[in-house]
Image 1: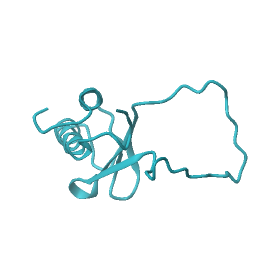
Image 2: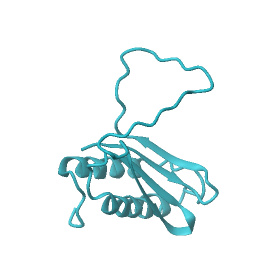
Image 3: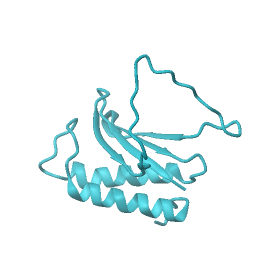
Length: 126
């Protein structure tokens, strides 16, 4: 299963953290002209990308974009919230509503995503 990306949005709606976990390699450069012609396709009556969101403390939102077959997104969101609490909020140099720039947050988030992808789910025991 694949987890594509993780976003953290502050209460004002500003993006304070973005991590692209899975970026497919483009074989050729693509150019776009405006307006873009966007077409949404359904595969087996399902949207291709699933969307998980968790409201955190003080209006912070945690968003995970993953494969629809990925299970345990709610548990993963809880783990991301725990990582945010432990490594961003407890960092004396971090200010609320500001972009998250903490190596320990990055490392722990990456390891949580790896565990979730390998297991296909993210149980409460992880």
